[in-house]
Length: 254
Length: 254
Image 1: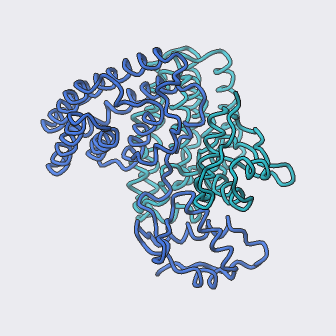
Image 2: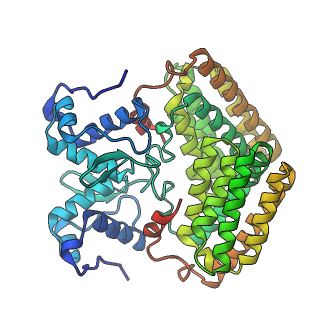
Image 3: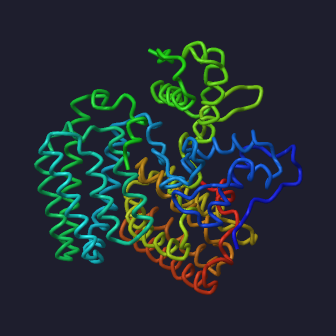
């Protein structure tokens, strides 16, 4: 049975935040997926017994939280990855970017080799085909000498997807795109390494060789770590390679 | 030199979203920490050459994103953990809660034993004192037979803090509190296990015995995993123990 909004007793006390919470529960309770259209303003105002202004304020809150999006003239829809924000760890608010980059590498070293191992054990034929396509896409961008950050994130996200673990699939792009908040990896001298190591990763996963996949991933991250250390040291306070509008940039991220 | 807001040329095109982005960059650029008071509405409207209504809309966006908070009659302040939201992985929007709980345990098994090991290697005397206090707090709540979820999260967060790694410290409470979105751990039969295993963890970290800390953490998570599997199997679709208003509940989480 489809869940609907319930009117709340004390009309005067109904805040936009509460209405936003109700709408969010409606989306979750009905399992509305990305792209599902929400009831219109009039219907929601009627069901909740609040003014249309309150509904509009609530929708604004949900837009800011990346839960719904407004398509002008068409209505309000559930977002692609509802609830996922650009910088969910709030890392852009941390002051010491050099330490942050090092900590990020340490965290990747904890998680990603194990993910690569699991990916090798579980990858389906379709998973491997997708990985190969994405590997080619990164390589093509690098050879064209254009920004390949987004493709790089997609590649590592696809490795995580091979595990079939939903949580891991959410965490990997966060870590990946967070790195890009601070470090412009395309400015690095790692391009040849990246091409070679990505290929080795795909081969190991294709061979279902978990141990090798884990080792290659470790080497890949260590390579990145050395590079980040070199960049941040060279720039002392790490200001030069830190993107001015990091948070804004990340909206093109995973 | 303190950064200020810059007026943007085309006044008419200045949307609340853009103003919100500007204010966010102001906070980051000036390294304003939690509790810092923002310039008032008039000043910001003047600097950006936009109307006060636009500023007010922008502030609402930043409130929804947990970046600033309004204290009535006092002003607008930077939040405690700016940018961190209740459910940053958007897990409450995922449909198969049983699979999600299992995936969550698998992810914890990847990360937390390594964190425990690193904690044992790096913990200072102060870290260990804090751990002992939090361990006692969980135990006290369990013995009083009251909800101990928040204390449990704080305990695991404190272990992560021993590593000195900022990223790990952000990820652990997310994973911990996400579990509580779906599973009411206080309904479990794990209370005695929890007390015993937490104590063993503190002892291993106190002895700076990384290997033992890692093993105890693995055993602790496996115990939780078996429990979650039992609960979710018993309730078939996992509806009974899934909290109706999970997302709202989590606001008390880490």
